[in-house]
Image 1 (cartoon, rainbow, N blue to C red):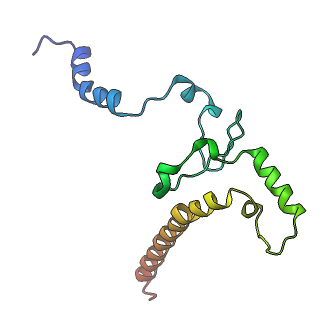
Image 2 (cartoon, rainbow, N blue to C red):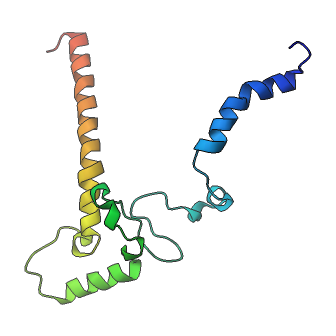
Length: 138
């Protein structure tokens, strides 16, 4: 209708977008948006109050995941101390291999890091091939 104000017209045009946003996007409490340390953002970061380490979840074992069984900083320090006190017949290249972070980190490598690196290598190879074709260097 011609008698609708510009403001009302904009509200009507944006109504579908606002409705989708309101009802389908995840809802976060206000502190998540305001405070940087309120939400764990990266694998292997540490929750500031509990000391629990944020570990990637193995999707194939999601039903058995227990968020209260993830390692804590205190637990990891104890595991490293115990490893140092025992006879090390097998050597570990990295400290995380001596702790309960070993399984989550290996899962992270297998499920995320290795596929990411393979994808990056494919992109780089295609780019090199394009450049070689452009200059006639096959």
